[in-house]
Image 1 (spheres, helix red, strand yellow):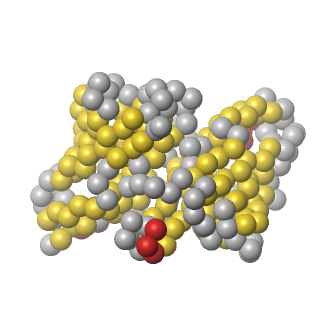
Image 2 (tube, rainbow over the protein chains, first blue to last red):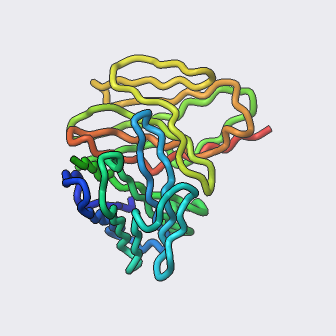
Image 3 (tube, rainbow over the protein chains, first blue to last red):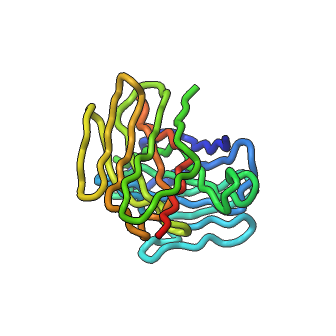
Length: 121
Length: 109
């Protein structure tokens, strides 16, 4: 099946610094990737939709200048948390959307990454 | 390697009961999640099992057997709105999530 990786798997940083998280589709191309944040009650909040070659679409309440998303290629999207604060500490998960044949015969499937755990001190 | 298996698609009738199975082989185990995802929407958290047994939450129940590497999600009194994809995900020893590909559940009247 399709594999999505994230790097790093965990990161600890000081308040005020920036952290970049990578999301890669390893054996397929994805024109659309999604970035989620998992909260303590385990719900996933969609932060933004990353489209290759164009600007990301952010959900209401998500600061685009704080969470910079770049989808430079069909296999890579990056999320940069700028000037990180302790309240940004969370588990960030990406997913890649696949359409058509690769999607197990279904119209659309999302393949999820393993997540990146961010701790801001 | 790490692997999560769940059926690709299931069909059930409105008002009936359906069981969606999930088997896993992972590097360690710290818990198993079930999420519901409607097309075009973010996954919604349904359940989290870390101990063996059945946990019931309204019409939805989730079962875990760690020794068998097995879980199921049981949906009762099916409603048309239950038509969605159901994702099984295991938290491994590094607290990373290993995801199944999801089971598309189709509810027929």
